Length: 145
Ligand SMILES: Nc1ncnc2c1ncn2[C@@H]1O[C@H](COP(=O)(O)OP(=O)(O)OP(=O)(O)O)[C@@H](O)[C@H]1O
Ligand SMILES: [Mg+2]
Image 1 (cartoon, rainbow, N blue to C red):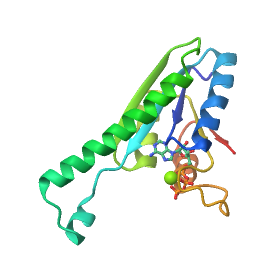
Image 2 (cartoon, rainbow, N blue to C red):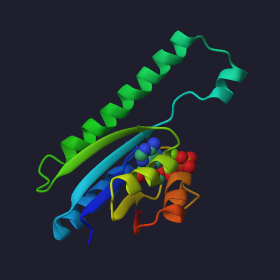
Image 3 (tube, rainbow, N blue to C red):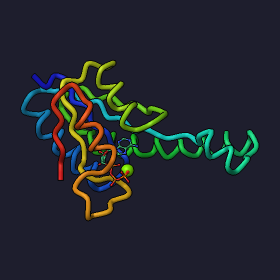
């Protein structure tokens, strides 16, 4: 049970709380931790509305990739003492879809996720990513408040 825990992080305080919880859980179950950050590239709809040249789009996506790498680097620092295997994955696309797809592909048997993320509008209990992941994942999901 809980051989591999998937932890989606977006760099928000909520996601670091989720990572801390995953660490505590993972120590008990001797779990591997797979940390994922999903970046959303400029999409076609935006390009139609505001025509950008190819170089601008490429540069924008490179910047996003750097931010994604930075978030995973911060996660790696936080896991430097973790006694079991850790893996890091940067995914590109729609966050909840990529998270659910990766959970299946990597055979994760649990997901630990923050209730809120970077947008952090306090009046809602769940953000759109945590809400969709908990709804569509086929493995247990622990939502950390
Ligand atoms: N791009 C992402 N990559 C990886 N994990 C993410 C990403 N976005 C959100 N998460 C995970 O989902 C949790 C909840 O974030 P979510 O995005 O659902 O809430 P929000 O940012 O407050 O609201 P919303 O994005 O719906 O406006 C985060 O704590 C994090 O664990
Ligand atoms: Mg968000």
